[in-house]
Structure formats: structure tokens, C-alpha cells
Amino acid sequence: MPESFSLPPVTSDYEAKTSYEAARLARHKERAGIEPFGDPLSGVVLVAESAPEGAASSRIVEALRRSLAAVGLERAYVTWARPSLLEEVLSLEPAILVVVGPAAARAVDSLGYPLAEAGFSEAPEGSWFAWTKGTFGLKLPALTPALSDDRAKRHFWKAFLALRALAAGGGLDPGPYHPRP
Image 1 (cartoon, helix red, strand yellow):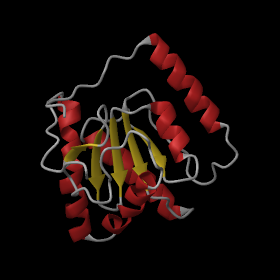
Image 2 (spheres, one colour):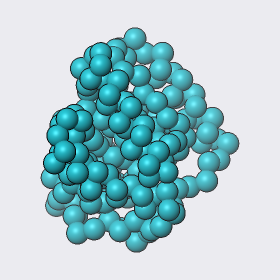
Image 3 (cartoon, rainbow, N blue to C red):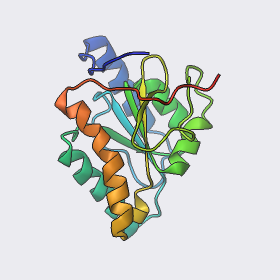
């Protein structure tokens, strides 16, 4: 298990592959609802629970944008739990995979990702773990309750602050959570 982490430099081959795959995925007709945002080349992918359309979804997008900016990760790529998620994760090959909420954790776990060594559903919120040999995982609480409840907001933000280590360039400690046998 890696002791520390730093985002890999973007190579032209990786950049070309990821750009191609991201553009191809964007053309899928199954993409209804909120569009992903951020830079797919950032190496950091957040998978958020699917949100209802309308004002609630725009509040969630705005809250994610502001939270990422507050920890210096404006470039992070944010997508949603949906049918094309496996293809998206395989295409982007993130170094960091973050799930926002238990439904997103279950969605990623249900992908049957062939290299996954641990599940997000069992992971403690706010603690890094090795999802695969090359990808760190982080499980966050659901964001929707945090939009209207101060206690839920503090709980979400406390877990979300684990992302500051990425922007600071510090090493990540995968913590005590280890893969299931």
C-alpha cells in the first residue's frame, strides 16, 4: 500500500486518451440530468449521488464547486452516479476517487470494478483508503442534507477537509481501513 501520494504529471498520451474518452462519453444520449464539470485530466474524480432536477440540483452543483474551490481543487472532475459510471471510471483512470454520499458509494461498489481491493460502502467517512493499488478512495457523507441542516453541514465539511491534503501536495495516509479478504 503506498505511503504517500502525489498527482502524476500529465503526459501527452494520457491527456489525448482521456480527452478523447471524456468527449466520447459526453456524447452519450443516456446522460440526462446534471452534466459533469471540472477537468477530467485532474486525476481527481468525485462521484456524487444523483440529484433531483431543478433548484436542488443547481444548489448541489454550486455547493460542490464552492467546497472544491475552498480546498484548492477547482480542477477536480465531478460526475454523478449513473449507468455510464463504470465506463467513465475506466476511461479516466483516476488517481483519487471520492464518493459523495452512501448512494454514490453503493453505485461505485456495484460497478464490479475488476481492480478494486476495497469497497466504499464499508469505508469510514473522511478517511483515505487504497481502493485499488493505484487509486486512493475517500467516502464523504451525503451533501443534500448539508444544504439545509447545520449539523449535517459540519459533518460533511469535516469529512470534506480530507481533500486539503491533495491541494497542499502533502502525502496521503491510507489510514486503518484495509481491503476485505
